[in-house]
Length: 220
View: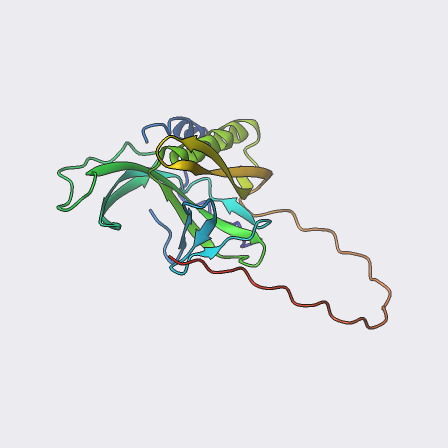
């Protein structure tokens, strides 16, 4: 099996249960070792503590069983508390917000994904959002998966490109919002293996192409 997008199937909810839960994602579990993926204020998708930019043409497989919802409390730019559960469960109960929380408990949604093509291939990431635009992007993707599962249960995994949209805000100017552009649907075992290419005739040596520069790293 292709391990790039194999998420495992033990103790997973049924396709019908998954579809119902994803369609109900409107009220608003992190993967161990996964980097944090987000869109910064300038509209760039970045990940990790050094805010490395995501390649424009990279592809990412979304784990359809990783959708979570719940609450998070932020204080001075740091998470003070977080309560997240799978979307197949009701929203968790919350008490008083942690001391120092800027806005109290905020609703949050999230998902896990893995890079399948590009410089960061095989890297696992977690995306979570409390903003209106971020939560809308997750909800749109969840509804797309629910529709796909109802149509073809054998290919419930969306392969996406990380895109962006923007709108004009009276106070903050241009505000960027994330978009998960679905380009393909694959099985939990990953894409079908490609047929072996015909053996090519040996070619004369050619000068190696100039090495392209790596992505710039953005200040946190």
